[in-house]
Length: 253
Image (cartoon, rainbow, N blue to C red; front, side):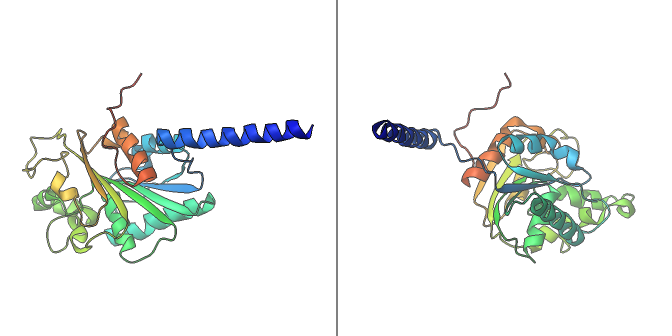
C-alpha cells in the first residue's frame, strides 16, 4: 500500500513538472486573478466604447473596472482625479491590489496627470491607445475656429500645442508604458492633419519619453478600441511588458 502511495505521489509530481514545462514553452502566463485593469475612455465617449477591451481582458482572467467620466464638462486636472480615483476604488471593491490601466486618447493623459501628483500602490503597467502625449494639432485646429470656441470643452483647449497644453508640461513617464498609434485616417478631408496618423492624433504626437514600447497598427482613432489585433496586443503587453512583434493578424473564424 505504501508503495502504491509513493508511486501515486511520484506520478503527481511528474505531471506538475511537465505542466510547468509546457506552460513555459508556450509562453503562457499564469491567470492574473489578482490583477485589476482600469479602462479610461476618450473625449466625448463612455464606458461603452471600451466594452470590447473589457470582454477580452476578462477572458484573459483580469478583473476589469470600466467607468464613464464627464469628459466634456471639466478640465483635465479635475478629470484625472475623478476618473482615476473611481477606477482605483473599483479595483479595491474587487479586492484586487495590483492595478494596470488601458486608455484611449484623453484617458492616457488623465493617467499621466494623476501620476504627476500621486503614487498608485501596486501599479503594474499602462497601455495607451492613440494618446495625444505631445498635444494635438487637431485640438489647435478646433480652437482656431472662432465660432466653436465658446462651446469647446476645457479638455480640448488643454490638449493643444500651446503653452496651455497639459501633456506637453507633464514630462517623461516613470511607469511601464506601451503606446499603440493608429495609421488609418478616415477623415483625410479635415485640415490640421499634415502627418501620418489615425485621423485625430498624429503618430508623432503619441510618443513620450520613458515609454517601454511603441507599436503602429493600421487602425483609426475612432474604432481602434474594437480592433481584435489591438486587443491582443494590449493583453500581451500587460502580461509581458512588451508588444508581440511576431503575432499573426487576427482573423475571425
